[in-house]
Length: 180
Image 1: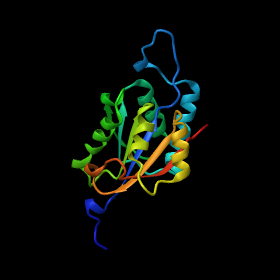
Image 2 (image 1 turned 45 degrees about the vertical axis):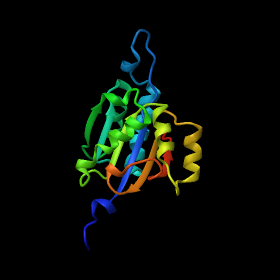
Image 3 (image 1 turned 135 degrees about the vertical axis):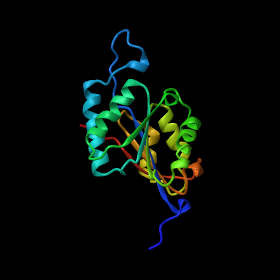
Image 4 (image 1 turned 90 degrees about the horizontal axis):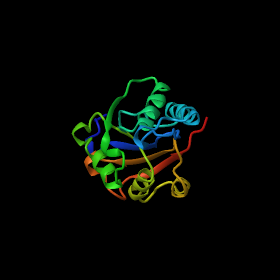
């Protein structure tokens, strides 16, 4: 069997919203920690990745404390060490910036089949809806359009290079809201 070329390779862009955060008095938004419920639901998201989700090859995570802590808990439920890059631009990013960040995986195309982006609302839902093209799972689209709760996961799948990622190319293939 011949190996697949980059143009034929299936990719998964997984958008993970940080888990529920606490609101301690006097703590800046960027530094807010996870609430107890958030820690439990982040563990449930880790269980979802282990049981149902695609295996991450690379994680690009907002540098906000609640996003970093969410991924730490999620990854503790997985059986592999996954490379993580903290990306300050994800805190307050636009959907276009999220797409640009994902396209940045292009030089590493051979190694990155599944990219997880850990970020914030309303950016993640808007990005997912912007990217989701023909053939997207209708129930997943409907659910995502209604609300992208904390710890929710959207999976967008396409064939090609990360450099090809553009609105309408991937299909939304799953939307999950793991809960403890």
